Image (spheres, rainbow, N blue to C red):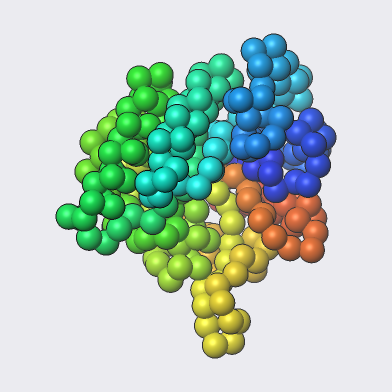
Length: 263
């Protein structure tokens, strides 16, 4: 497995963030492409080629793109979000990066509800669009259990419907972040390396913490990934903290010390 960093976790402009990722030893970067210079509505054809050239010069791969625009559960915004996500897959094609990750919104518990069928239809439309272009639409784990998400993705019935596995999101929500790897094994194409603690009387509400300081058991987690044959990216995401850059530097070192991770 290789180590990546999501560009949005470094508070600097895109090229500086890419250069910093290379300096700290990342093998690749997941590019954040929403409301910034990499948004497909902003990045023109020449800019897309320049970005590929710049990253090739650094020796950095693109692990995935991240296009989180608020999900597909709100009827007032679903058409706009589907259209924007399709534009993101056109960018995936141009950047030769076949994985797009996002949050789709909470999967309703009532599989017979209109909300469930509407979300299913939206995700199927986007996943089919992705698959037709040799890409996949990777839903991020967290709001629901791995079992609930797996059942939903089976119901989507699209080869483009996949998973971005975030163990910390599952941990913070009180789900089984290790066991759910096996449940979602047929769908996992990308992962976020993040740590957290669930809600408790001692710690208060659920919260993200630096890698290795929470309740995600990384040796067990990586062993579970190896067991299912996963050889993709462990992409570090640090969404908070006083010094996210320092936390990311330590996270790269931490992951590279684990069995099965490329030096």
